[in-house]
Length: 239
Image (cartoon, rainbow, N blue to C red; front, side, top):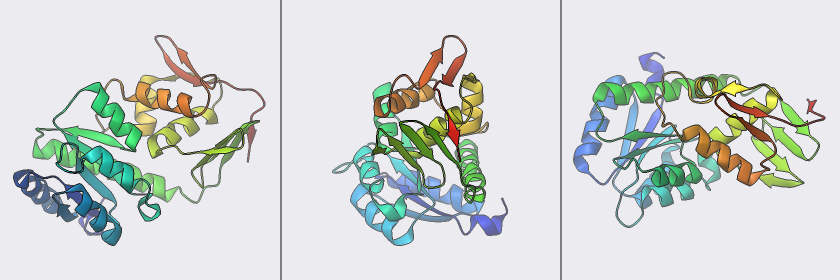
């Protein structure tokens, strides 16, 4: 990704700690990105609707409105549907990550973090997004009787009801459903859904699989102990 391209990419930083904002802003601008910042969730929501950022780096622990609530609200705003969100947090407990993914987060970055690692993670995420966007014209619909997965429109319909899935959950479900009965190892899933350059927690896949099962049906995604996961269903149709 060239510097001219990066200058067109808008990143919104949200953190109530001034030194963190200054640190992240400096390193992202040095890399060539177009950087904006806010110190509260409420202001971040207003700014995000004005600038339509490609990426929001959002702190979890903030006064008045924390990152989880802020993320939930952002995910309900149509014009920000394609905006990616990374949580910046010093908390590593499973429950905070689960809450973050439930709210629609794409990834987590733990504090403290070195400038090189931080920029590398941002570059890797945006590189993946560029690949996804370049393939957005491809039409692909998978049907399994009472389950429809429409990749072009990012829609999942189960038993006649539209199911809302965050981006990573949708991509994971679509990947597995595209190859019924094929067993995907955890490494394969990490590589195809998150990318090789992105570091995620050990429970990330498990959390996403659990949420997909809760929203659809446990029978679709099977756990193959010691190996990985597979999608299992009869009468597949592809369009």
